[in-house]
Length: 420
View (cartoon, rainbow, N blue to C red):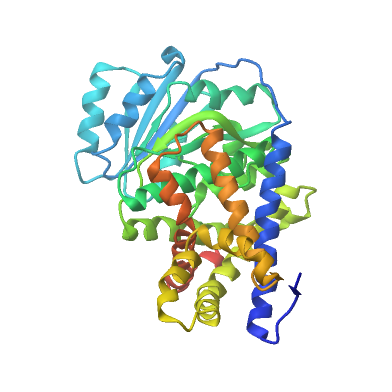
């Protein structure tokens, strides 16, 4: 069998090097997932008094559903206070909360100026009565068991923060359905790392819980960073406390309805993630594989996103068939999961080429991990998800493109984030 290790083309050889690291990162996730199947950290039943903070800004479409989901929770509401912190809304948000609070005394409205989410959350913390604080975004709906599950790990004093697993609420459009699969894939990664290392790497603060004394110890949430929840999780981990993803603590969040909304959200996430790496880089010295993986992953994908799109364009044309009738099937294979399958099928004829080997393996293992995530969280493998699975690769290109645009967007911003 013919085996091609390198090419005379320098650009294609660079592609081999890059795709090798992509495969290593993805294969590492697969290995950690397998290990996580044999790890189970059990916690005692723990139901302390809790304070729930919901920061709000112009959330008239979402806030009632959010609060209602909390009121329908299995948790003892006598142990609960709900602080709805208004960040200077100009719509009907405050009126909705005032109406809800008339019928339920545990709901309280706190009004603030429009200074951003961090200030709103910090204002809520000042008014809390209890030692455990749950933060829930206004566009989020929690499962009835969420509070019981998210608070349970705090029976262990080594746990400093927890966050749940998020799902897209009722996805309809193609953009929303891609996000639905992406969230499940991320949930698998985060829960796997959390079980194996006691740190779920990416921290999603849309539905999370903290020890109040720890928040005060680190100075609450800061405005010098775009992802204040991720920043907080790294601060807490820096105190040698566990930051866990709780597999049974489910919540559902509103999707980004179009590419514009997706760009606004993801550019903030991506750039905020880069900020966190620079701000907390000293954590790399800790004996934590999860942190080392997280930081390397964040830096690598940033560099990869800059290189990836021109590299893909080059590779598409490098192998482009000369026969016109073969171009459309070729492009279909290139941008779908059928590409890796087709190349594997052709190995007896073509042999093995390292020019494409690691890209093929990355595509296969990503597909396997997505299927495992759908199974793990007991979601249905319907026609919609099969379609997304087949064409997930183009969606990753879109996310890479957004990452590059976020670098441009925030680099030109008047706010000098890296200097604060």
